[in-house]
Length: 74
Image (tube, rainbow, N blue to C red; front, side, top):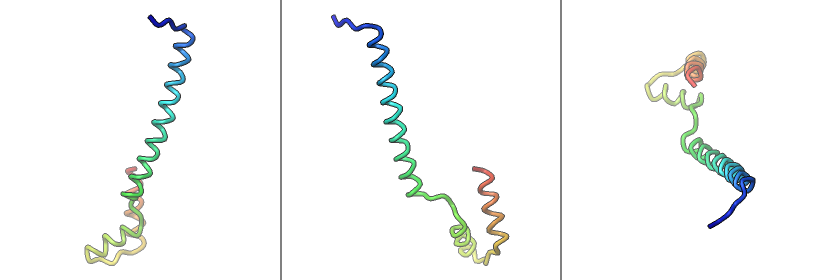
């Protein structure tokens, strides 16, 4: 049977936790970066394009109002 001291067990547990947190953080950051590149957040240019597709010429005030309402719900 394997004999391991309590302090060794605690050390291995803490080291495993730290490595897991670092790997998890890096994986989550890479995944989030990939998702943001694939689906960028809405900007003013996109809002202008949506208005133009609806057949309307938007004013700056309308675009700012839409951006403000979109940012309000983030």
